[in-house]
Length: 295
Image (cartoon, rainbow, N blue to C red):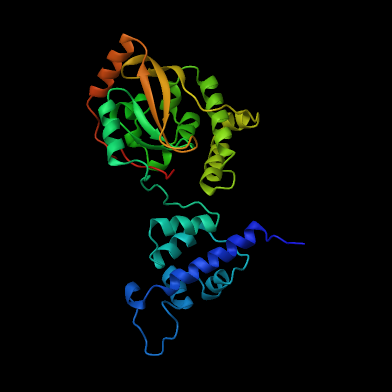
């Protein structure tokens, strides 16, 4: 009879091995420490990592021994900095710890310079790149003004689910908001089936449930809808009512990132999009097209 170790045990041992391997590859000089004559340990000592991370030596030792202890995102962030982890290693650290990276809004590698140029050239047709979690990874000028002023939002707030249930400007722009949000939540549930154990998905779900009674009520229905586009009405506060065709173009597997466009369905909507795209931008601290949460 074969016994399979629980996933939590596997994660702890993988995390312990990963931390040990990263610690042993760093020289004291790399982190501003003086190398002593009697140094037998390759790389840094455990107490040195603990000192650089501002955590207890015993606690860090337990972590490398794969003991069942809780690790906060803040401590993981400190360890990542102390161990000089690159973005891929940092993401791996948080994944092994089953934790959400508080600084995870790094540019998505799928948004290439060519794709950014395509977004710009699609103007005044609103267009953006989203992942299956509805994170807005990049967008052109007109999309940035279509439902709310995306440039004024923090990167971690540029998520369609979050905006649809919490942002007043976005909600005011969506005609038939209850039905649209019900469909979005059903699509989100269908997509989440493949990502149930992923920290970033669980964190977004927890944020939505904490922030919106409307979302909690819809989520409790357990409705699912497959991906797809449809005609929509959007009321933009600056140019008026727009009749648009929402279309998805997948950039890889259906569960991956997609190019989302809103093509005008009548001449009046087309003219209003041209006017929206040509409006003078207010002063902002964020660029018009910026990477957000990794897909």
